[in-house]
Image 1 (tube, one colour):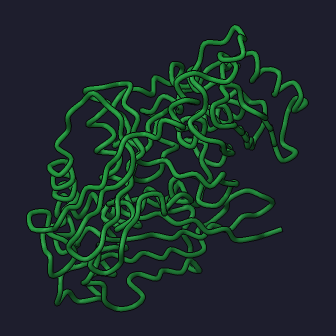
Image 2 (cartoon, one colour):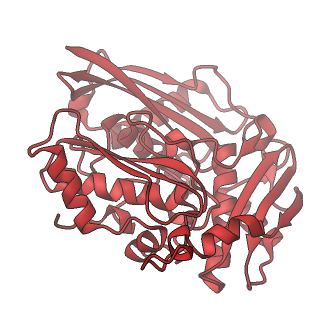
Length: 380
Protein backbone atom coordinates (compact mmCIF):
# COMPACT_ATOMS: atom_id res chain seq x y z
CA UNK A 1 0.00 0.00 0.00
CA UNK A 2 1.30 3.44 -0.96
CA UNK A 3 0.88 6.49 1.26
CA UNK A 4 2.33 9.95 1.74
CA UNK A 5 3.89 11.51 4.85
CA UNK A 6 5.11 15.10 5.26
CA UNK A 7 7.56 16.75 7.68
CA UNK A 8 8.72 20.35 8.06
CA UNK A 9 11.96 22.07 9.01
CA UNK A 10 12.84 25.76 9.40
CA UNK A 11 16.05 27.76 9.11
CA UNK A 12 17.86 29.31 12.06
CA UNK A 13 16.41 32.67 10.99
CA UNK A 14 12.81 31.60 11.45
CA UNK A 15 11.36 33.79 14.25
CA UNK A 16 10.64 30.82 16.53
CA UNK A 17 14.11 29.36 15.95
CA UNK A 18 15.66 32.77 16.60
CA UNK A 19 14.00 32.61 20.02
CA UNK A 20 15.13 29.03 20.63
CA UNK A 21 18.70 29.95 19.72
CA UNK A 22 18.73 32.97 22.02
CA UNK A 23 17.39 30.88 24.92
CA UNK A 24 19.97 28.12 24.37
CA UNK A 25 22.75 30.70 24.01
CA UNK A 26 21.83 32.14 27.40
CA UNK A 27 21.70 28.63 28.89
CA UNK A 28 25.15 27.76 27.52
CA UNK A 29 26.62 31.01 28.84
CA UNK A 30 25.49 30.10 32.35
CA UNK A 31 26.68 26.49 32.10
CA UNK A 32 30.13 27.68 30.96
CA UNK A 33 30.57 29.37 34.34
CA UNK A 34 28.25 27.32 36.55
CA UNK A 35 27.45 23.71 35.64
CA UNK A 36 24.76 23.61 38.35
CA UNK A 37 22.85 26.63 37.02
CA UNK A 38 19.08 26.24 36.97
CA UNK A 39 17.78 27.87 33.82
CA UNK A 40 14.29 28.04 32.35
CA UNK A 41 14.66 30.84 29.85
CA UNK A 42 11.98 31.94 27.39
CA UNK A 43 12.38 34.40 24.50
CA UNK A 44 9.71 36.37 22.66
CA UNK A 45 10.52 38.24 19.44
CA UNK A 46 8.36 40.89 17.79
CA UNK A 47 8.77 43.98 15.65
CA UNK A 48 12.06 45.56 16.77
CA UNK A 49 11.88 44.04 20.26
CA UNK A 50 13.07 41.00 22.20
CA UNK A 51 11.71 39.94 25.60
CA UNK A 52 13.68 37.53 27.79
CA UNK A 53 11.69 36.04 30.65
CA UNK A 54 11.85 33.02 32.92
CA UNK A 55 13.66 31.75 36.01
CA UNK A 56 17.43 31.55 36.47
CA UNK A 57 19.31 30.58 39.63
CA UNK A 58 23.10 30.69 39.34
CA UNK A 59 26.29 31.99 40.93
CA UNK A 60 27.40 33.20 37.47
CA UNK A 61 27.07 36.81 36.37
CA UNK A 62 26.07 36.97 32.70
CA UNK A 63 25.50 39.94 30.37
CA UNK A 64 22.27 38.64 28.88
CA UNK A 65 21.66 41.65 26.65
CA UNK A 66 25.01 41.26 24.91
CA UNK A 67 24.40 37.55 24.38
CA UNK A 68 21.07 38.37 22.74
CA UNK A 69 22.59 40.94 20.38
CA UNK A 70 25.48 38.65 19.45
CA UNK A 71 23.08 35.81 18.68
CA UNK A 72 20.86 37.96 16.45
CA UNK A 73 23.98 39.18 14.63
CA UNK A 74 25.24 35.61 14.17
CA UNK A 75 22.00 34.59 12.51
CA UNK A 76 22.29 37.52 10.11
CA UNK A 77 19.56 39.95 11.12
CA UNK A 78 20.90 43.46 10.43
CA UNK A 79 18.04 45.35 8.75
CA UNK A 80 15.12 46.66 10.78
CA UNK A 81 13.18 47.45 7.58
CA UNK A 82 13.19 43.79 6.45
CA UNK A 83 13.34 41.70 9.65
CA UNK A 84 15.39 42.93 12.66
CA UNK A 85 18.63 44.81 13.40
CA UNK A 86 20.80 43.41 16.20
CA UNK A 87 22.22 46.91 16.82
CA UNK A 88 18.98 48.83 17.35
CA UNK A 89 16.36 46.34 18.58
CA UNK A 90 15.01 46.87 22.09
CA UNK A 91 15.74 44.15 24.64
CA UNK A 92 13.62 43.68 27.76
CA UNK A 93 14.65 41.42 30.65
CA UNK A 94 12.18 39.91 33.11
CA UNK A 95 14.15 37.26 35.01
CA UNK A 96 13.44 35.81 38.46
CA UNK A 97 14.95 32.96 40.47
CA UNK A 98 13.68 29.39 40.38
CA UNK A 99 10.67 28.92 42.64
CA UNK A 100 11.73 27.50 46.03
CA UNK A 101 8.75 25.15 45.80
CA UNK A 102 10.23 23.58 42.65
CA UNK A 103 13.76 23.58 44.06
CA UNK A 104 12.47 21.69 47.10
CA UNK A 105 11.69 18.68 44.93
CA UNK A 106 14.59 18.97 42.51
CA UNK A 107 17.39 19.35 45.09
CA UNK A 108 16.40 16.21 46.95
CA UNK A 109 14.11 13.54 45.52
CA UNK A 110 11.10 12.08 47.30
CA UNK A 111 12.92 8.73 47.49
CA UNK A 112 15.83 10.34 49.34
CA UNK A 113 13.50 12.12 51.74
CA UNK A 114 11.75 8.84 52.51
CA UNK A 115 15.01 7.09 53.35
CA UNK A 116 15.54 5.01 50.23
CA UNK A 117 19.12 4.24 49.31
CA UNK A 118 18.92 6.63 46.36
CA UNK A 119 20.77 9.93 46.40
CA UNK A 120 19.42 11.82 43.41
CA UNK A 121 17.64 14.97 42.45
CA UNK A 122 13.96 14.71 41.72
CA UNK A 123 12.51 15.42 38.29
CA UNK A 124 12.11 19.14 37.63
CA UNK A 125 8.53 18.67 36.49
CA UNK A 126 5.93 16.04 35.84
CA UNK A 127 5.46 15.00 32.25
CA UNK A 128 5.75 12.42 29.49
CA UNK A 129 8.64 12.20 27.03
CA UNK A 130 9.05 10.19 23.83
CA UNK A 131 12.07 8.94 21.95
CA UNK A 132 12.01 7.35 18.51
CA UNK A 133 14.26 5.69 15.95
CA UNK A 134 13.85 3.73 12.73
CA UNK A 135 16.09 2.25 10.06
CA UNK A 136 14.99 4.51 7.17
CA UNK A 137 18.23 6.57 7.17
CA UNK A 138 21.81 6.21 8.36
CA UNK A 139 21.00 8.55 11.27
CA UNK A 140 18.08 6.35 12.36
CA UNK A 141 15.68 9.23 11.70
CA UNK A 142 12.52 9.12 9.55
CA UNK A 143 13.18 10.08 5.93
CA UNK A 144 10.78 13.10 5.73
CA UNK A 145 12.33 15.03 8.64
CA UNK A 146 15.83 13.86 7.69
CA UNK A 147 15.57 15.45 4.23
CA UNK A 148 13.68 18.52 5.48
CA UNK A 149 16.49 19.30 7.94
CA UNK A 150 19.19 18.76 5.34
CA UNK A 151 17.44 21.14 2.95
CA UNK A 152 16.86 23.89 5.52
CA UNK A 153 20.46 23.61 6.72
CA UNK A 154 21.71 23.85 3.13
CA UNK A 155 19.48 26.88 2.62
CA UNK A 156 21.28 28.65 5.48
CA UNK A 157 24.70 27.50 4.28
CA UNK A 158 24.31 28.90 0.75
CA UNK A 159 23.11 32.19 2.24
CA UNK A 160 26.03 32.55 4.64
CA UNK A 161 28.63 31.47 2.08
CA UNK A 162 26.99 33.78 -0.51
CA UNK A 163 26.59 30.95 -3.01
CA UNK A 164 23.12 32.50 -3.34
CA UNK A 165 23.97 36.03 -2.18
CA UNK A 166 20.49 37.57 -2.21
CA UNK A 167 18.92 35.33 0.46
CA UNK A 168 17.86 36.56 3.91
CA UNK A 169 17.76 34.47 7.14
CA UNK A 170 14.08 33.45 7.35
CA UNK A 171 12.92 30.28 5.62
CA UNK A 172 11.16 26.94 5.89
CA UNK A 173 11.05 23.62 4.08
CA UNK A 174 8.48 20.85 3.77
CA UNK A 175 9.14 17.40 2.33
CA UNK A 176 6.53 14.79 1.40
CA UNK A 177 7.77 11.20 1.06
CA UNK A 178 5.88 8.42 -0.68
CA UNK A 179 5.98 5.11 1.18
CA UNK A 180 5.37 1.69 -0.32
CA UNK A 181 4.73 -1.03 2.26
CA UNK A 182 6.19 1.28 4.94
CA UNK A 183 9.42 1.85 2.97
CA UNK A 184 10.34 5.32 1.64
CA UNK A 185 10.58 5.08 -2.15
CA UNK A 186 10.45 8.62 -3.58
CA UNK A 187 10.05 12.31 -2.86
CA UNK A 188 6.55 13.35 -3.88
CA UNK A 189 6.67 17.09 -3.04
CA UNK A 190 9.15 19.71 -1.84
CA UNK A 191 7.92 23.07 -0.56
CA UNK A 192 10.61 25.66 0.10
CA UNK A 193 10.02 29.29 1.06
CA UNK A 194 13.00 31.57 1.57
CA UNK A 195 13.29 35.23 2.44
CA UNK A 196 15.15 37.25 -0.19
CA UNK A 197 16.30 40.74 -1.08
CA UNK A 198 13.90 42.99 -2.92
CA UNK A 199 13.91 43.09 -6.75
CA UNK A 200 15.13 39.50 -7.17
CA UNK A 201 13.59 37.74 -10.16
CA UNK A 202 11.44 34.84 -8.94
CA UNK A 203 12.45 32.57 -11.81
CA UNK A 204 16.13 33.13 -11.03
CA UNK A 205 15.46 32.30 -7.37
CA UNK A 206 13.61 29.11 -8.29
CA UNK A 207 16.43 28.01 -10.60
CA UNK A 208 19.11 28.72 -7.98
CA UNK A 209 17.20 26.91 -5.23
CA UNK A 210 16.59 23.86 -7.43
CA UNK A 211 20.19 23.60 -8.64
CA UNK A 212 22.19 24.75 -5.61
CA UNK A 213 20.06 23.39 -2.77
CA UNK A 214 17.60 20.66 -3.74
CA UNK A 215 19.74 18.84 -6.30
CA UNK A 216 22.76 19.06 -4.00
CA UNK A 217 20.90 17.51 -1.04
CA UNK A 218 18.20 15.09 -2.22
CA UNK A 219 19.48 11.81 -3.73
CA UNK A 220 18.62 11.75 -7.43
CA UNK A 221 17.09 8.27 -7.16
CA UNK A 222 14.35 9.73 -4.92
CA UNK A 223 13.39 12.40 -7.48
CA UNK A 224 11.45 11.71 -10.68
CA UNK A 225 9.42 13.50 -13.34
CA UNK A 226 6.38 13.46 -11.05
CA UNK A 227 8.08 15.14 -8.08
CA UNK A 228 6.39 18.49 -7.41
CA UNK A 229 8.31 21.64 -6.43
CA UNK A 230 6.76 24.69 -4.77
CA UNK A 231 9.50 27.31 -4.35
CA UNK A 232 8.30 30.60 -2.83
CA UNK A 233 4.75 29.83 -3.96
CA UNK A 234 3.39 33.24 -2.82
CA UNK A 235 5.75 34.90 -5.32
CA UNK A 236 7.40 37.24 -2.79
CA UNK A 237 9.09 36.86 0.61
CA UNK A 238 10.97 40.07 1.41
CA UNK A 239 9.63 40.94 4.88
CA UNK A 240 10.60 38.18 7.31
CA UNK A 241 11.87 37.36 10.77
CA UNK A 242 10.19 39.06 13.75
CA UNK A 243 8.99 41.89 11.50
CA UNK A 244 6.90 39.48 9.43
CA UNK A 245 5.85 37.13 12.23
CA UNK A 246 6.40 37.02 15.98
CA UNK A 247 8.64 34.34 17.48
CA UNK A 248 8.50 32.30 20.68
CA UNK A 249 10.75 29.75 22.37
CA UNK A 250 9.40 26.20 22.24
CA UNK A 251 6.92 26.62 19.41
CA UNK A 252 8.67 24.28 16.97
CA UNK A 253 8.59 21.06 19.01
CA UNK A 254 7.69 18.85 16.05
CA UNK A 255 10.55 20.32 14.00
CA UNK A 256 12.82 19.66 17.00
CA UNK A 257 11.92 15.98 17.23
CA UNK A 258 10.66 13.59 14.53
CA UNK A 259 8.59 15.71 12.20
CA UNK A 260 5.31 14.27 13.47
CA UNK A 261 6.35 10.73 12.54
CA UNK A 262 6.40 9.76 16.22
CA UNK A 263 4.38 10.91 19.18
CA UNK A 264 5.47 13.93 21.23
CA UNK A 265 5.11 14.49 24.93
CA UNK A 266 4.37 18.18 24.57
CA UNK A 267 7.32 19.68 26.45
CA UNK A 268 9.76 21.97 24.64
CA UNK A 269 13.55 21.72 24.94
CA UNK A 270 15.31 25.05 24.35
CA UNK A 271 16.32 27.26 27.26
CA UNK A 272 15.99 24.47 29.84
CA UNK A 273 18.85 23.07 31.93
CA UNK A 274 19.10 19.26 32.17
CA UNK A 275 17.28 18.95 35.49
CA UNK A 276 14.19 19.59 33.39
CA UNK A 277 13.18 16.12 32.21
CA UNK A 278 11.31 17.67 29.29
CA UNK A 279 14.74 17.94 27.77
CA UNK A 280 17.04 15.40 29.40
CA UNK A 281 14.58 12.49 29.46
CA UNK A 282 13.64 13.13 25.82
CA UNK A 283 17.31 12.90 24.92
CA UNK A 284 17.61 9.68 26.91
CA UNK A 285 14.51 8.20 25.31
CA UNK A 286 15.98 8.90 21.87
CA UNK A 287 19.28 7.29 22.95
CA UNK A 288 17.49 4.14 24.05
CA UNK A 289 15.25 3.93 20.98
CA UNK A 290 18.19 4.48 18.64
CA UNK A 291 20.18 1.73 20.29
CA UNK A 292 17.29 -0.73 20.17
CA UNK A 293 17.26 -0.25 16.38
CA UNK A 294 21.04 0.02 15.95
CA UNK A 295 21.48 -3.25 17.88
CA UNK A 296 19.10 -4.99 15.50
CA UNK A 297 16.41 -5.61 18.10
CA UNK A 298 13.73 -3.86 16.00
CA UNK A 299 13.32 -1.85 12.80
CA UNK A 300 11.31 0.86 14.59
CA UNK A 301 11.21 1.74 18.27
CA UNK A 302 9.39 4.31 20.35
CA UNK A 303 10.16 4.80 24.04
CA UNK A 304 7.93 6.67 26.47
CA UNK A 305 9.20 7.84 29.85
CA UNK A 306 7.01 9.55 32.43
CA UNK A 307 7.96 11.39 35.62
CA UNK A 308 6.41 13.01 38.69
CA UNK A 309 7.85 16.31 39.93
CA UNK A 310 10.25 15.78 42.78
CA UNK A 311 10.46 12.00 42.20
CA UNK A 312 13.69 10.51 40.82
CA UNK A 313 12.58 7.23 39.28
CA UNK A 314 10.31 7.32 36.23
CA UNK A 315 6.68 6.53 36.85
CA UNK A 316 6.60 4.34 33.76
CA UNK A 317 8.76 3.08 30.89
CA UNK A 318 6.94 1.98 27.74
CA UNK A 319 8.41 0.25 24.67
CA UNK A 320 6.63 0.09 21.29
CA UNK A 321 8.23 -1.55 18.25
CA UNK A 322 5.22 -1.51 15.88
CA UNK A 323 5.45 -5.22 15.18
CA UNK A 324 9.08 -5.02 14.03
CA UNK A 325 10.80 -6.51 17.11
CA UNK A 326 13.21 -9.42 16.58
CA UNK A 327 12.83 -10.46 20.23
CA UNK A 328 9.86 -10.05 22.61
CA UNK A 329 9.31 -6.47 23.79
CA UNK A 330 9.47 -7.74 27.38
CA UNK A 331 13.10 -8.73 26.76
CA UNK A 332 13.85 -5.33 25.28
CA UNK A 333 12.35 -3.66 28.37
CA UNK A 334 14.49 -5.86 30.58
CA UNK A 335 17.65 -4.91 28.68
CA UNK A 336 16.76 -1.24 29.08
CA UNK A 337 16.19 -1.50 32.83
CA UNK A 338 19.46 -3.38 33.30
CA UNK A 339 21.52 -1.00 31.16
CA UNK A 340 20.29 2.50 32.01
CA UNK A 341 19.79 4.62 35.13
CA UNK A 342 16.72 6.68 34.28
CA UNK A 343 16.78 9.01 37.30
CA UNK A 344 17.47 12.68 36.43
CA UNK A 345 20.98 12.46 37.92
CA UNK A 346 21.63 9.15 36.18
CA UNK A 347 20.66 10.66 32.82
CA UNK A 348 22.67 13.86 33.40
CA UNK A 349 25.81 11.92 34.29
CA UNK A 350 25.45 9.27 31.58
CA UNK A 351 24.87 11.78 28.77
CA UNK A 352 27.21 14.43 30.26
CA UNK A 353 24.53 17.11 30.10
CA UNK A 354 26.01 19.80 32.35
CA UNK A 355 28.26 21.13 29.59
CA UNK A 356 27.44 24.12 27.35
CA UNK A 357 26.35 21.99 24.38
CA UNK A 358 22.86 23.27 23.79
CA UNK A 359 23.48 25.78 20.99
CA UNK A 360 24.51 22.72 18.95
CA UNK A 361 21.05 21.26 19.40
CA UNK A 362 18.83 24.23 18.56
CA UNK A 363 18.70 24.20 14.78
CA UNK A 364 17.88 21.41 12.31
CA UNK A 365 16.63 18.99 14.94
CA UNK A 366 17.84 17.80 18.32
CA UNK A 367 18.28 14.25 17.00
CA UNK A 368 20.26 12.62 14.24
CA UNK A 369 23.45 14.65 14.87
CA UNK A 370 26.32 12.25 15.47
CA UNK A 371 28.36 14.63 17.67
CA UNK A 372 25.79 14.61 20.50
CA UNK A 373 26.09 12.18 23.39
CA UNK A 374 22.57 10.76 23.10
CA UNK A 375 23.30 9.74 19.51
CA UNK A 376 26.17 7.40 20.42
CA UNK A 377 25.65 3.71 19.74
CA UNK A 378 26.33 1.30 22.58
CA UNK A 379 25.93 -2.44 22.96
CA UNK A 380 22.73 -3.54 24.70
